[in-house]
Structures are given as C-alpha cells and as structure tokens.
Length: 128
Image (tube, rainbow, N blue to C red; front, side, top):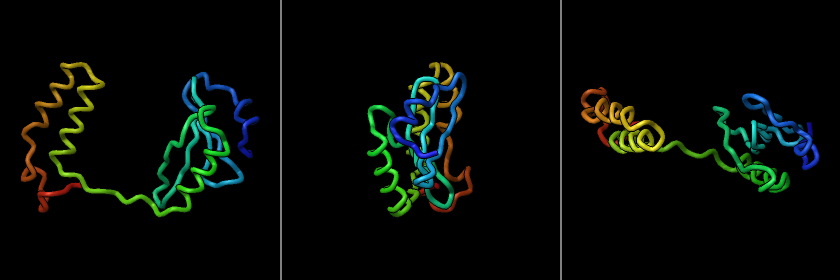
C-alpha cells in the first residue's frame, strides 16, 4: 500500500490492539493504527529497531516520509553504555512514576544493595 493522506484517513481505528501498515514506496516506513491514534514509524538497522516519528494529523505524511528517509539514510544510532547505578536509579524512578507505591518500594529494596561484585562484571564503570 502506498501511504498518503487519503489512505491514512480511510484506515479504520483498531477495536483491539494495533495494526501495522507498511509503505510500498519507502521500505521501513509505515503507520501503526491503534484504538485512538495513527502513528508513523520507521524500522531501521541490522536488528530492525522501530522508531516512532509522529502522529497523524499533527504530522503530515510528507513530513513523516522525509523524517523516515533521514533516519534510514543516516548512520545507525550507537548503543551507549550506562553505569549500573545510574540504570538502577532510572529504573526505580520509572517504577515510582507508574506503579503503586508499595510495588515501587519492593523494587527499590530488592535492587538497592546490588553491587557490581554480585554481577561478575569486570569493568565497574559501564554495563550494556
């Protein structure tokens, strides 16, 4: 299917879950239709990662296609290393934001004493 403004407008919202529609003109580009939103995406890289570009109608198909082409033509984003304590703290902060307080505290107490010596990792500065 060639994705354009008219085809997106005609795509029905999903009753349950999501449905992906891929563009024939630009491999890797497509739109995901959910219950309430239609979101543009691009699939790229050797490991076929997916990146959301924007939602329709806030972003036009033309702009989304240009953004997807830029992602596909550019170098693959490099994975970065994160210190273990920083990753743990970010995870706990996310838990506190979206989970019940009691559940977040259980995660906190389960992870607060984790040490690199427990993990068997030789480099104490980074963890992938």
